[in-house]
Image (cartoon, rainbow, N blue to C red; front, side, top):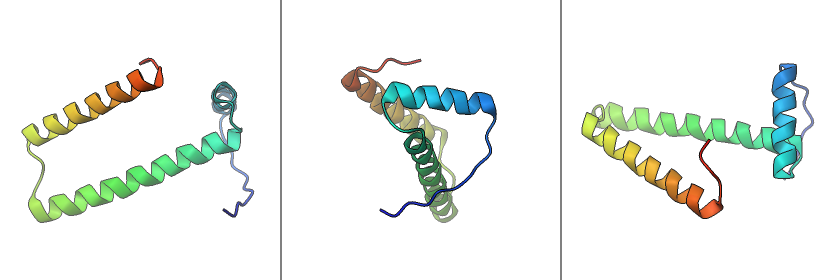
Length: 88
């Protein structure tokens, strides 16, 4: 994959926190920031799909939203228990 060096401006305390997180994970700061940017783009794409679906089928019902939240909570719990991570 081709890479491109860019310059961005961030609050100093944010950079320090990100650098600490990258060090804890044993990855370069640039990889941590790139991962966060990729997640943001996936979230935006997901929102667009949801908006498109709702435009065609109508808004989600409270029951559908509750079921989705429960599914997400279960997936999070499964991930945390399998990865050894703890909820913060």
